[in-house]
Image 1 (cartoon, rainbow, N blue to C red):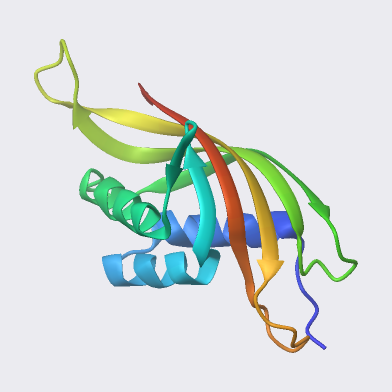
Image 2: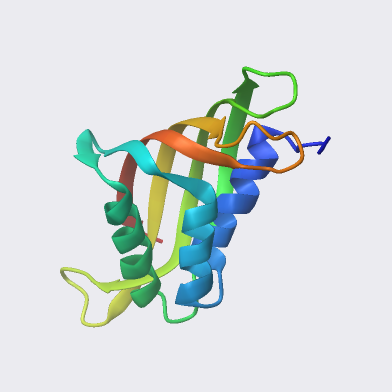
Length: 147
């Protein structure tokens, strides 16, 4: 039987991999390893689909010439199984490294994407020998602000 890390550790590792991967291909693999393709996701109250997550990650990567960096501010989890195969997590993090031209600026300025998330994580397999956890529900409140 595989000993699984906490939902907080899993989330921190996977979200970092999604945004901090050195190549777009690795970022897409990280998205596949993190999110269920049938995810129920909202961003600022608007319903999105799995494809929208992929598009959002790729778009942010294009706006980050030096790469993205995730800074976790807070995370709390509540496993619904003793082996950490499923449960909930709430957290806050900032994605840094995004550069955009802003009103009243003549050159791109660094933007921080601030996110508060509430997620449901579930194993996608009944096997206790693999880690098949994926985010199946995700509610994001996000805003961008100059750093």
